[in-house]
Image (tube, one colour):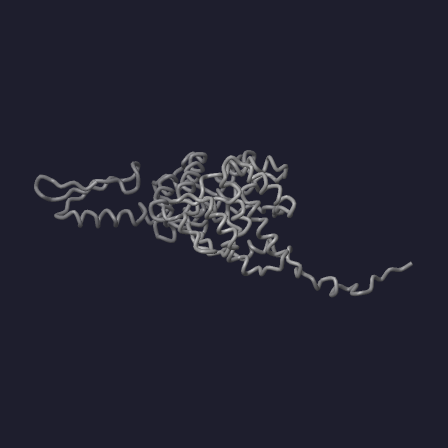
Length: 329
């Protein structure tokens, strides 16, 4: 806190390293000088010796959020999840936190959640230390660098065949929310995530193109659609603001009415997977698909490569058998 004193000077009074750390009181002639001192303390740790760091793990999470986490797209979720991890760990002092402490927490946590969730939590806490080290706000080694994520089995992505697509769209059209079918068709035509399509504004449907912004990775995607689909969407949209009302719940009910059974956890992305799978089956290019889906890493898009009719097409001819079955009687 910086407060002007009766004599005209300014008094800086704060705890730069949390309530358990030292109290800093300084008097200066100007507020600017006090702010400079405050910024200097906030830019460094209590000591260059990590073993003397008096901060709690929660103090590091708060500092990470202030200096970096706030800029992330999912910053509120990341902060709440990381704070929950720290609470479950008992919020130890940083100098006492070790990899084995997290390993013990993880072993118990595995009985409650999936391996994928555990791996996310590992990355969240690891990134707190990594980012503060990069910003020179933590002097010690990253204790989470010793923790490896678990191997996750690759899931086969579920997609709809043509008959199932017809059943799902018919069920969507029967919904009391008349925007459900339009959003579903946009997802099937563009590979958009449900929320990306459902939250479109009227200004994002430009002629026969859809502009997706505010996406998961922050990149803008512009995808062409057929004129009749564009006209259909315009005919249903609101006269202002958003194109559609929220209709994910209606979509979930439509899936149930259609009789199509989906694996757990794939309902929200089934239309996106269906677009990508049929795009490759119809001879699409994997690099174009990467741009359509907005994947920053081609390895993610390669999950759909095997749907291409050209995928490993020369393997049978190049195998040792060649054209000879080598069948002996």
